[in-house]
Length: 494
Image (cartoon, rainbow, N blue to C red; front, side):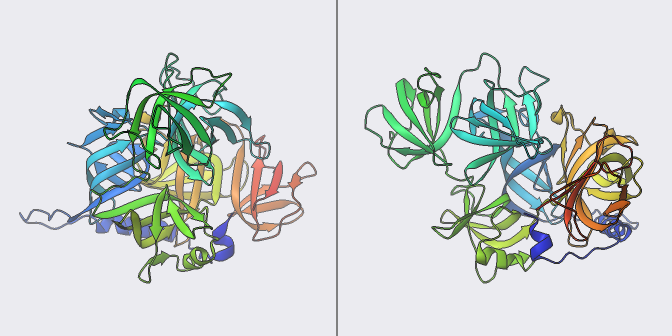
């Protein structure tokens, strides 16, 4: 749902002005002058943050570059020595501090645990959107996207959106959109790895060695605890939230029965009693209409009269429930297992591009402006790249950044509007497709051309209009698959 185009007014500002503003703000972060006075270090605020890793060279989470020197790492319940055990797309928790600039900080600990691990079943490609595929893992429906899910293979360098297949053993990290796990990271396990994992709530425990594991999506797994299995010191009890590790002895006959070698107590959200400082989390808003409660990445959130909404009209979407499904960044404090919201900001992707990139005015490997052109089509689009942009390629751990982009590099970008009308990239992926694409608000259309964000594609008798002919203001997707400057299709988006 293109929420901001219907509920909010968008103010468009010249991109040059946005760039000037960004450069001015960057300049304000440095100090000049002469003398022997040492610069005053920025003050820091203790903070716990949960979000997706968007890059390395330090660890970037929620737009903050965390210095990880001296940090401890807990990855899949095992200690790690450094961030080489992590990857772009993983949902992690960072404990540490954030400096006054809001863009840098220091991590004391980084922890990661996948949502589910098991065999891919029922793999299917979305008929209406080929860039989306779905499958199930341990009774959990998973959705992956070609441009926003990072794929990695422990012993399969070719593992990707295109090569994933039924029977692959994968671990998945992401967040739930209702009953569906939207994956930001999928890793194919070694071929000899037959250990599976799932998290959920214990039910129907028989005080012996069996119980039902109720997953977050409401589906269940029958669990048999193996002799000698590692279990909580106080034992297993109903209503515990646990992670189960084990095997499926009979995948064909009893695919829902797990022989558990380990049952471990887990927090049902990402935070615990030690998170008594500022808390920040970025993800999708979920609304439980029955309980009239909101959550982000499984963390319950609560609003008050002092909550600051950005934009202010987001408060209306919270009040009537229509904000469900929007991506937000939430800041506040954790109290009685609920995040008390002090500030909530909308960060919804509404724009998508596939074009030829030229880097403009780069101020660092992850800060600058990428100008996109679209072959023979007239016009360009400037997109701001910053610390929140997820850089994706086949080797996302290789610190891929703006320095790797030469003029004309084909990229695919998902982006969102900033409050000042500029465009900010949420993800940037190298692309080898020959065609061009732009998705955004329609400026104008006539018998010979279609204009989106000031980019003009020609029309001819072969242009296919899906869902009818749009009018100015509609959100549309324009594709030029053969790169001849003529739109092959124009589709009205929701």
